[in-house]
Length: 496
Image (tube, rainbow, N blue to C red; front, side):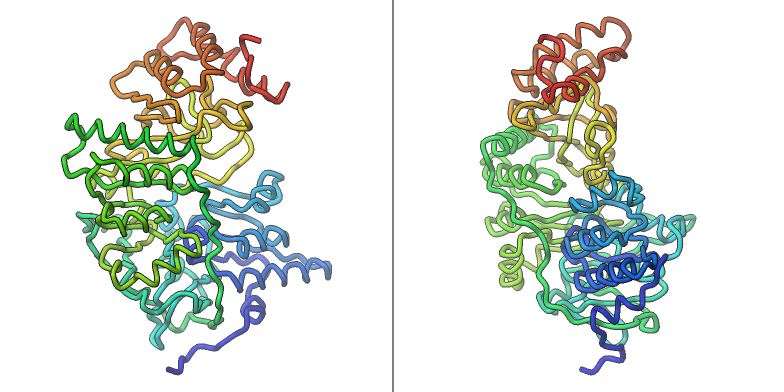
């Protein structure tokens, strides 16, 4: 079928973007992120810089992207500002060197900020699609992100039609945008499997400046096989939830699960799937990873709602081959819906996220190393943690070959306060912080979660906190971090 939109090369599309423009890219993680056009923008930026002319753009995305977007633009020094979440090593270095202005946002709040204009005008929206009709109906690919809001608020739109994704994806997506205050009513989603929107994204055809045809796989890296540590963390989470189920603190038919991204998250899902006392359950999450697909096949996962298929390329290819059998048990939503605090609270989500470090008060640092170096961003962990039926944070007890303890006297950057964190899990055990006062919490965290190499030092610090409600000591709160900066090893902060 002939389309009324210009067909462009990636370079021709990139030539339409001007220095100083703000560009919003669709997708969520590398899943569904455009690839050829941002790479061509990076090439153009390099040429402009070589000619002695400035060229940078503001970059807004749903979440992290792939190397052909964040990575290519960062290497080309083509980004003036970036929000809300990233994971590319080149971009991370640019952010921490203050070459890119980065500001973090809860992912559920991004679309709101775009709609009210607090991020400035969106000059271009660039989307990846599996199909498009002449009247502007777009079938998105493996990630939705904030595409509906980007498309509505963007002044002009460019589309990459990626042939790696079949047009038969139509029906997987549930595209819904809430009405803004003061006229907003509740979002009418009452079970994980409810569909409340359209299976396509409706664009204004007059805003479509061109289409670029591509054939590129998503740049999602393969997940590591569970090792002894991640396996044990997964087992500890599964055993804890099974005990909560047996105690009647979780309903007999279980509750929907949210799980973060990464190797620990995959291990947790695998352990839940293998546990004989965990019944088949549903997921209401951001990312659907490789373990999600395995659980669907096993029948342990009844339904999976997410914002993207963040699957390794072989797993995504397998999903598309099995799409006829699985499509009625899957849905992809905009992040404003997948991460919506009202829905999280209403459905009773069990949230499982990963920490960089946790302290003896139960505060969680999930974004910054040693208080100043941005890792990735807060992502959606805050959306779920603060509103969860049960909030769990996981981490290995050690990093850097045992030189760093992830359980510390005081976190150097607090993303989630002790008031939102109910359970901390490492490979050594589970610290259930409910019903405990601050000193009890500190003791349980040390005994249940800390590595034995660090327990004496943590107890030593706790003994120094001899007054006040919270176990806190101004002089020694960052003794572990100071020790590492001085010696390259946190061990012996108090007992050397």
